[in-house]
Structure formats: structure tokens, C-alpha cells
Image (tube, rainbow, N blue to C red; front, side):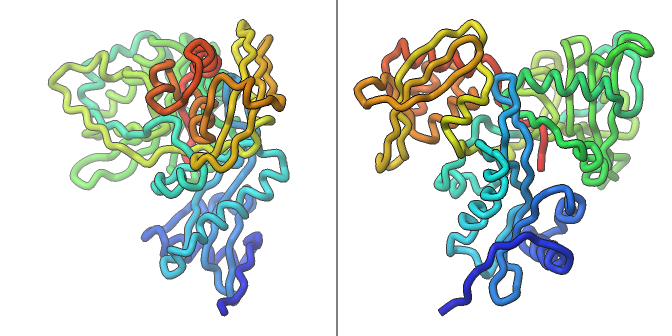
Length: 392
């Protein structure tokens, strides 16, 4: 009989073992293990005195509908290669979520390459993720800097701008106080802010990092791109183009460019623009009723519709009456006869995140229901697009 597996919080010597395990599991060092120690919850699985799995987690708000919803954010999860195949990862995820759920988390989010396995566990990707690479000289020749002033550094006003713009999307975190220190430690990130005149409130904030390029100069990677309007976005892209004497290409990380075709609208047809699909962020609703209550909703929407939320295999269905009025919503128990739209739990998660931009998109995803009711439900969450602007 195998020895019992214990799930515990990692401290001191155990943290060293988890750090070594993460390096062995990922095939490279995982700096976040050390950089976030003491700032986040670190859980490990131990058997026979040996660390065989682990992961990081922290609780913060994740914006949906303009409001921060308490979310368990999970990162740096790993299982020892010799322990894989026995669903230890699923048990580890459950144990990592548990203390954060006790603190109030009603959602959980993670970046993962194991999309099929995560989906089997109840996680779903609201939007594809990709990195973009564009020649710096193309940015230089395409975008005009305008009259904006550029300041190096992160100011309270710049953080206020970012926090305000974050509410316009579904997914950005209400960043913990240590987040900028983490960006600097993890990526060597630097921040630049853009304003109309000296002393004015910023209209743009850009976070980037540079590393040595294998062939010449440097590689520039954009991790954060916050623009108040089109003029600010153009000035920020023009600024990135000014690095062309040292930087052959500018790389926009998954978090580093809004899901809007800023580049495709402006760059010449001859520009060699490269995109690479990346593992997406995946979301899981831990508490359906609280997730609905704490989310933001359109202030002008007055909606009352019965919905069914069921397991993918049909083993369990819950029936609710969803009522939305004056920017708030609640779910109350209902009978099956009252339900006009049927979601699987995965479809409900995608709808909650605003992934369905139209009724047709919801129907192609398999959502069933009365057309008018489904159209109204889609409108309730599609006002803001999904975009997770932090990688962890």
C-alpha cells in the first residue's frame, strides 16, 4: 500500500524542495517560486517526507462587468514527472483552492497549457491567447508620436489610470500591492507613462522588459499596454518603434496588447507580422450564486429569465431564476418548467466571462434555449470583452 499523501503549506526547507521540484518538472528554473514566497499561499503535496507536487495561489479581485469578483489565482503548479498519471494534479488544485475559497473566492483562474485536462476538471478558456511580434522599424515608420510627453517610472496617477481602464474588460486583476515589485523582479520590467503635458494625469502606461538578443541588440517584450484612447495607443506604439536601432522586433506578450486589431489596421501590407498561439487563461466558477451576485451588470438592463446549469454529462442540473435590475443580479431556485435557457457549467462560465459576443456564437457553442431569452442573456455579459492582463 502506498503511503498517505499530505497537503501542507510550504515553509523554509520544504520551499527549497518545491523550488527544486518545479525546476525539474518544468525543465527550467521557475523564479516565481522564490519571488512570491511570503506574498502568496504555497501548497505542496508530501509523501514519505518527499515533496511530489506543489503550486502557488493568492486571492484578489478579478474584474467582471466592471466590478472585482473575489478570485483564487493559481500559478506555478507542478507534479513530479514520476508521479504523473494518477490525477494528483486534480487533487493538488483542489487543495490549493480550498484555503482561498475559505477566504471568499467565488472564482478561480489559471494560465495553463493543459487545456484538455483543465477542461475535464471544470475550467474553460474565455478567449484565445497569442503573442505578437512586429519589426520595430515598422512601428517607427507607421505610428506618429504626437505631442505626448513620456516619463520613465510608475506614478500613483498612472496606477489610477490602469486601475480605471481595467474595469472596461472582463478578466483584469485588482492587482495586489506587491504586483509591480513582482513584475520588476520576474521580468526586469520598466514602466513608461504618457501625458499631454508635464504634471498632467497620464493617458497611457506601458510596461516592458529588454533582454539580450541572440543575433544583435536586444529583444523588447511588452507586458502591459494601457491606453486611454487611440491617440495614446499610437504614441505608445511609436515609442516602441524608436528602439529600432537596437531592437529588431517588438514582442507583445499575451497580456501586452488589447484584443483589438491596433496593429492590423495600420501596418503596411508588406510588414512581416508574426503571431504565435499560446496557452490561454482558464476560468472556473466556484460558487454560481455568489459569482452572479458580486459581478457587475448593465445598469439599463431589466431581465428575468429561468436558466438551467448542468454538468457536461447530464448527471446534475440546477435550476435558477436570474433577475437583473439596476446593475445588480441574483439567482434564486426555480423549477425546471421555468427555465428558458440551458447551460452546461462550461457554457455558463464562458457566458459569465463575456466570451459569447453574439447569440449565434452562444448557439454554436451548444447553448440551447428560446432565442429571445438567449439574446437577452448574451447582451447581459458581452458589453466588456475578455482579457486577462496579468500573467502569473
